[in-house]
Image (spheres, rainbow, N blue to C red):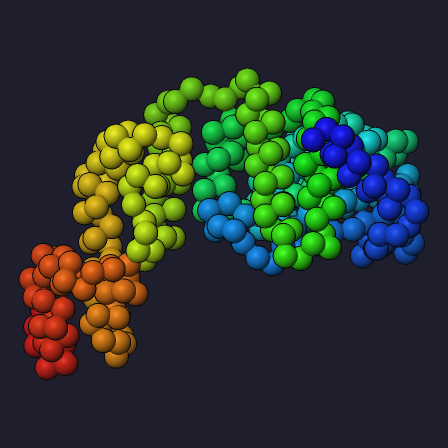
Length: 311
């Protein structure tokens, strides 16, 4: 595996040095300031965590600082040279083999070193549980992971870049590379915070966000959701009861009934299809749950709506 990864690294270096890769100039520059190549990932294995794009850039001494804001997380690896970023009024310096993660929707300014400008790779990502995975690694919107020397990460970034032309498999390759870097961070980062009330509150907010996004997914379950957030089903149940004062099942059923009610009021869908649309796979169970919260069966409720009777 190490030989294979090194071969990928050497292949990439030869391609970049020979000019075979596409070269782009910075939009604000009069002349090309760096070799720049990237590609988007237009497919997803899962919406829980998914790569957005992969790229490589090699700056020159002529390149000036630039700023941007991105709607996803940015995972960087410094292949050589030096540079830095400014975020929330603070500057952070990086050198060869450093890995760092930056948050979405945040103004970031990049500074290549004027003498030894950096060359770096990136895998940008997002997803419903991305924030939770990062928090498990000790990373949040105020604490950015910085590894002062993680050379083993290069093989993952190089393999992700190498996957550019493999249209059928690249989403799987990049997904595995992304989690490979996460695994390295987990092995080396010893600053993962202990569970506290604040961490618990953050964790539950992420769980609730995930449940909201996947509410109409018929396969949504307490056990699977707990596994996604690396907690036991028992702790998940206690957490949900503590913060919502109802069980997970009751919460999901009620929220689905609310959505079903809205569809009855705004669409001409058949009752059975409304149940399927909001996440119920069994029409009989949908009818039972709906009547529990609305006091009428779905058909009765729909008829009263059409007859303008009080509900």
